[in-house]
Image: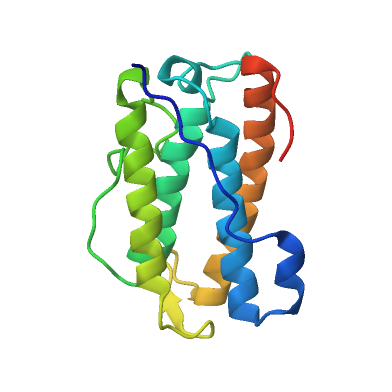
Length: 175
């Protein structure tokens, strides 16, 4: 039996985020965007996930999953938490942050690595105040709040790409 990207159950409806604490709101919106990316992939087989469908771009759904694992790791674990961890999928000098190199044969593994990275990133941020700061690799003082907002916008932008990729794959639309 061929592996397919698993279905996604929403943890929280967006309307429920309107009356919670700032931290709960940021975590909730980030979770929703993470789930949205995975929902765009749900039910697709590895070959579909690794296929570029919006020519001339070579962007793929699997490449987006890999990219977001890299971006999560960079901001939450390396930058904010100061963990000495390597890349998830890429080398330090390739500059593609996981977008390239997506292969159908690795889809199940790559999804597992994404999920593991999300769990590790949540753990890296847990218990820290949103106002806690760190020095970025470019010398800017940034806060954990900033990281949450950056990640929400990063997912929102790439989820827009995922909309087009999914629709061109099998016609599916929706959030």
